[in-house]
Every structure is written in C-alpha cells, then in structure tokens.
Length: 495
Ligand code: DQQ
Image (tube, rainbow, N blue to C red; front, side, top):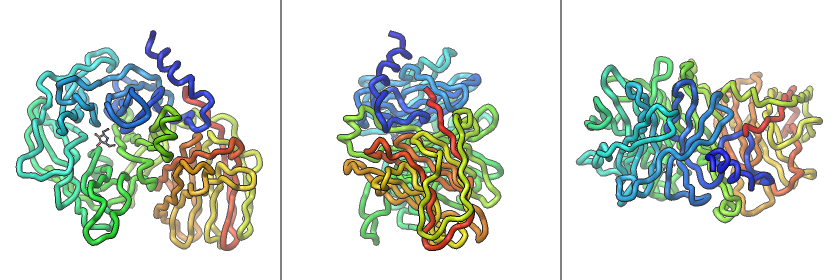
C-alpha cells in the first residue's frame, strides 16, 4: 500500500475525535515529540520529528518525516530514521538537526543505546530527503569530554564558519547547571571538543531558573546578536535552598554576543509561558532568510486518555523570530497561516461594564483565529472567555491582568473531565498606561496558542467535555474597560 494511503487509513479513525487539531501538524497516529532536522531543501520545507510507531507513548524513537510547500499544509512521508539493532542508536534515534554539507543533506542526531547518548550522522541522496544512510563509523563522538561530570549529553545544533563546522551538544555539568558543549570538525566525522559555549547556574532563580541540563540547544545568529534557545530539564526535584524546584520542562532563550567561540548572554526570557506545552523547540533559516521555529505541544491529559485517543503530541504553528530593538525576540505566527482563514466575523464593544461578560455574537467555534485589541481602561482584568459552554460550566480564560502586568491563560475550568489537567499560565507582558493590548489567539480543538504584543506567547491544552463549549465572551473585572474589538476567522483544515 502506498505510504500516503496508509497514513490516511491510520488517521481515518480520528474523524470524530473532537480534540484532534485540524490545522496543527501531527503524525497520522501514535506518539510525537520534538521537531528535528528542520530544513528547507530545494524549495520544500521538511519537518522530521521524534516518533514512536508503537503507540501514543514515548519509546522506540524513530524520525517521522513530513514535507510542505508553504509551512502550513503538510504531507506525510515514510519514516526517515529507525534504530539499527546492535548500533549506537539501537534504543532510539533521538533529537538532532539537518544541515547542507556541500550539497549533501546531513543529519546530526543522538543515538541512544546501552544507557549511552552518542552523536551520530546520516546522509541522504538526491531523492527529496526520503532515504537516509547512517555513517558506518557512527558514533562520530565516542563519549562526552573527559573530566566533565555530566547530566545528559544529547541534541545538536550545527553551523559553519569559513571551512569549519561547529556543533553544540546539549548537556549539564553536575553541580553547576545546563550547558552547550562546543565541538568543531572539517568533515562532520572527526570532531574536536573545544569548551562549553556557555554554562548556566542551577542555583539562580533570576531572571529565570535554567535547571540542571539543557535539552535541544539551538544556537544561531539573528540581527547583530546570537540567540541560544534551551529546553530546561532537571533530574533532581529538590533544589538546594528551595523546598521544590520550579516547574521543569519549559523553553527559554538567551540573546547575547558570540565572540572567540564563547557566547555571553545579555538577556534571558521564556520563549513561551505554557511550560511543557511548548517544549524542545527547534528553528531553521528558510530560503527567504526567515528564522522559523516549531515546538512540541505536549498533551495535558492522563496517559490513559492518551492511550484511548490513539495519538499524543502536536507541533506548534510555525513562529517567525526577529530581534527587536529592546533585545527581546519578536515572535509572530508565520504569515502563510493567513491562507487558512475562511469565514470572517467582527465584534466591537465600546466599553465593558465592571464585572460583566458579554457573548460575542456571530463568533464561536473550536477551530478559529481571533485577533483582539483592547484598551484596559480602568479594569483590573480584561480579556476573552473561549470554549465556553452555555452557563459557563466549562470555559477557558485569556486575559491581561493590569495589576500584575501579566498575560494569563487559565485552563483550570476548561473541562469537566477530571482526567485533564488545568493550569494557570502567566507571563510578564509590558503594557504602558494607555497602550492597547493586542492578542492573536489560535483555537484548534485541544490546542490554544496565544500571542501578545508580538513577543509574548502562551501555549496550552484544553479538552472540553461538552460539544457545545464553543462560545466566546469578552469580559472585564474590577472596573469598566475601554474599547474592545475582535476579528475572527474560521480556520480550514490543513489535510
Ligand atoms: N527528547 C529526545 C531527546 C531530547 C528530549 C528524545 C526532549 O533527544 O533531549 O525523544 O524532549
């Protein structure tokens, strides 16, 4: 049977699943985690991803593969990498990147076997990146650098300077914190260890805690600076001096300078305030010179529910990254997503009275893009209620909290199903007095992505139990708000 037909058959059984996203990428079935090997090759976008063909749970990791002409519509292709029995990746082909090695598409990935994480490479011939051959000499790095006591040694980001290739491997130095270990090579087969590109400090909580180990490091130039994206991981729940470590598994970025092969961070921020719902992101530069990032949106329901559903894990929308004058990343959904917009509605409210909630007429649904602008006025909280059931037994809140200066996604009452998790996600949002709040919200069944002011994101999951949890309200608390307007588009399926 042809691969596309098989993929379609696998997916057919999800036709009536109310939680399965329609315009976010996900595999035909089973488990997906990190985006890998993102590359545009001869005009086509390729996405590889951590995939378990054996069910909707992590394990026996292969590299799934999909292709797109526009970053939005994807077609499934056969799996690109599978573990080789007896090889250094016998127990899993873990995360890595794709590069163009003088015309040869090449993966650098982590092979896992016998408790060891070791860098491996694979190359593809000119067949549209469909078939891949592992280098017989794998692993290309036999073991982590001598003399370093490490918490993990995996995941790769590579680039070229002159004739020399460089890569960083994600790691953690015991007793210190996360790090990205820098290597260089002339042929991608022989690698020389240089030093840590930079080292975190696990005992520091400000400006944010960076854990014991950095997974999925991603290092690149942007504007006149360099950016290091990290996925914060911790193996020890008890941080000295603190009763509990802050939440582990989230992504962050540092902006700084790269000189003499050392990276000096000048600022550090969360990449997304949804914690583990935006994890292990990877970016690449496309042929138009845009820096585009995808992240893995983890589930927010019990393992039993995931097993029953038959699928787990969703890819985020493509996010375009730019460097802003204030030294932060500009983060905006890729413009191509606008091609998914179908029927349009608009609502405008001059002012919301204190402690009222007004249903937005003509705007409802679970696969929508919303673009909202509001003036907080005198309100203490102003925003939207989405996926609301009549009577509000189920509802999800997205708002700006004026007093704390925070963007909030509250999923604690999103579902009556107790097998789903609700959380209060908050992220600092700088709004000057009199300034309008601009939100773009993407509702795609169980996925919610919120983008505010072009720089702050929160991603979360919701699994409303009622089919009529579809209405949308605007609300204000504390005092009256100023004007509020909402544009809404039905979003088409990408399949
Ligand atoms: N997932 C991969 C690792 C990576 C982790 C294994 C992050 O390579 O460190 O599936 O989700």
